[in-house]
Length: 451
Ligand code: AMP
Image (cartoon, rainbow, N blue to C red; front, side, top):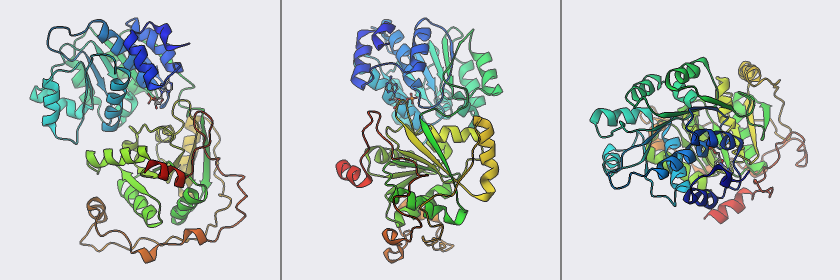
């Protein structure tokens, strides 16, 4: 079914084609007609299924039919989303699909100074994409007027609740007009999400894409047994030996993310970390650099990763097994976006086997970890030197000064002893292909073309 069958306005169809989409995804095929007909919607769709366009296109269509003509622009659609990165991503999508319309969108989120956002809001916008905390801030300052909102979107509702935004969301929604259309999207439908939906939506149409909870089908999952002390060696081995070129590594903690990133740099891998302890500018720079290929590896915590939407992530590596099974689904959903394929690799140490069992129950699959063939299981990367008490590692990392071990301590990875033969790849994840089926370039090729 082509996009033209939805009856969207011409400028919108042109915008979609210019974005490079040829056919709608499942969630788009089902949600767009229902939303255009004015229904409230509960969209239960895994991450990476194309749900952003599923709500953005009907909003753009509705607002372009009845433009704010002649009078000052007022906010007519509000999209609430859990993270800053996701807000920026949705704003970009709106600008992309709506490039041939006159509509204006603005993302408002925390971690950046507020006056710029106030200026943007004062100038008049049609669509606001917001994280709950910063939006409450604007409401308290009376720098935003939501009294004319016609369409509300609650995006990644499960994560908004996980992140403790339930009170903020309820407070914001209680101030919106009762007569409105509400679209709620969530990867999982917990009792809490159902309660929120029951309170905020009217006779919604429920759209379920894929089996609930199971990770999207395009991702190949691999689990490797490895003791904690060898995880860094295994990571470096995989990235270098298996020639991974666009890798998202997950760490459970901010400190862990910084440490992994530092040690990768020591091993000569171009890496950067992203987590809530970094400023918005640092996070955006890390994301932009990863997107452009400047950084080969992005090391992220769960919350920071929620908004990451990067085309062509070849591998997601869980450096530690997530303790919440839902996080596993969100993590691996960062690869295999829309129609591309991807590999998700999880390192499992003895004490993490219990979490693996939980994930197995959650996604209804029997999961077991195997030793990684071709990896020596002999420690070869040095531990980080313990930082002097007076200078904390996070500070050093942030300022970019003084925390890198001296060059001479770098291990020689090319000469690391490796068990088995290079050709023994029976339990290796294959190199990913692009959506068109072409082999992706190796790291060196990619870096050259990106520079
Ligand atoms: P989302 O689930 O909205 O984050 O989208 C996941 C990825 O799929 C993004 O990179 C989108 O640009 C891409 N995408 C969304 N809709 C389509 C489509 N109809 N055709 C091709 N790619 C799409």
